[in-house]
Length: 178
Image 1 (cartoon, rainbow, N blue to C red):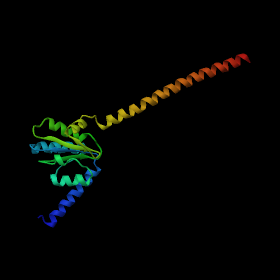
Image 2: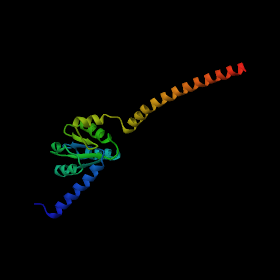
Image 3: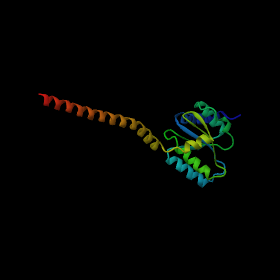
Image 4: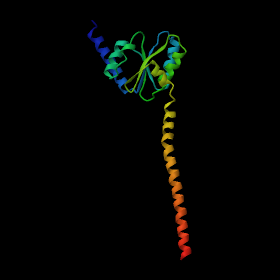
């Protein structure tokens, strides 16, 4: 039976991790087996620069933190070595970085993930990694929203020009009749 002090430390770790997961928009769980210290350092640096947090977590602590955060359905992948990367802002950066590393590694693998509390399998995480960056998606969305407005303005502009031409013609007719 663990001592009261150790149990309290674990509860605090679970609570802190749970708060991080609640505020995260995305998370990716990986099996980090076989990664060298140099590669791990490089991977952590790349994730940190992208704004993602990355940590190795005991499966039991992560299971409890995920449940506390309301993210259910990942218990089946919480076996073996587990690390998690998560972000509060960027939906694709962590998935891109970890998927890229997993492609070049024989032992490092994507286990699963979540987006806004919804669970993704390994394939879903890889699909997420294939999405363009947030800035590109926003630009495409704004372009899509802008296109109908531009078309509407063009129609209005054409209608107004036609109306002006018609009004000028009427004015000229009235001036000629007077």
